[in-house]
Amino acid sequence: MSKPLILVVNDDGITAPGIKALVEAVKDLGEVVVVAPDSPQSGMGHAITINAPLRLKEVKYFGDIRAFQCSGTPVDCVKLAVDKVLHRHPDLCVSGINHGSNSSINIIYSGTMSAAMEASLEGIPSVGFSLCDYKHEADFEASVFYAQYIAEQILKNGLPKHSLLNVNIPKLALKDIRGIKIGRQALAKWVEEYVERQDPMGRPYYWLTGKFVNYDHGQDTDEWALANGYVSLVPVQHDLTAHHVIPFINENWNFSSVDKGDESIPNVSKERFNL
Image 1 (tube, helix red, strand yellow):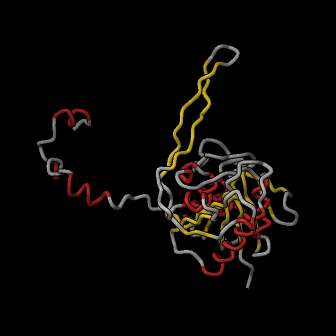
Image 2 (cartoon, one colour; image 1 turned 45 degrees about the horizontal axis):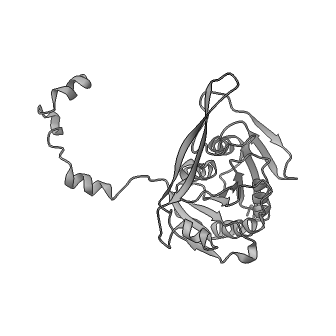
Image 3 (cartoon, helix red, strand yellow; image 1 turned 30 degrees about the vertical axis):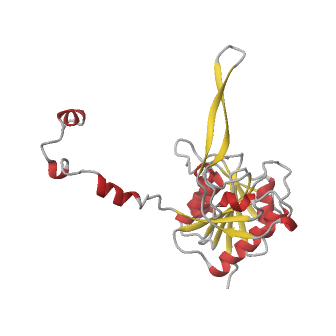
């Protein structure tokens, strides 16, 4: 049987130390192919390129491992890899290792996790890895250890369809990490503001600033795990439906006036929508 085919992607760019560490973690687990952005794409979320051509160039950044740099977003990288680069359906997609946390609400903004999500949408078992250290020279020893272990588990045991994993590693030495905690996404958000400044021409410009605020004190969350020295593992799904809201709307809203084209619809609504 052929070796497992492993796609490696990221959002920090193909020259980032984190993706080099991730390649190191999975290179002995199968045939590895890297497709990553040619420049940093942090915070791109699930963006795709639709108004410009995409460029794909083969590079030699990882020894004998096939690698391509892409001019697009992390999601573009996955789409191009599946359609143009890979010779068969991958057995695993690993994304990262991101420089900085993607726990809690950060998953919404993360290019790292969006790349893994896109691969999962393609039916590829996927996981995004992030180290809670923004420094370029961060120590990835613990991340490599846990990335390899989790990748092995996925290749051996699989993942349920329409799911993927969000894995965050605390900024600790390998010997100080207490293990892995499986949990849920904490309820938290960024409290943000824009600092206004002026350029030399007197024109205003803005820098985004803010702080991360955790409103969730549960001991089953990713934030609790990281704060207490554990690697956080959160299973993620594509379905964004708020299922608990469906019965609330059914019980509390009144749809009788709009059912079957009822004439009791207010005239202002009819005029607004040219009814």
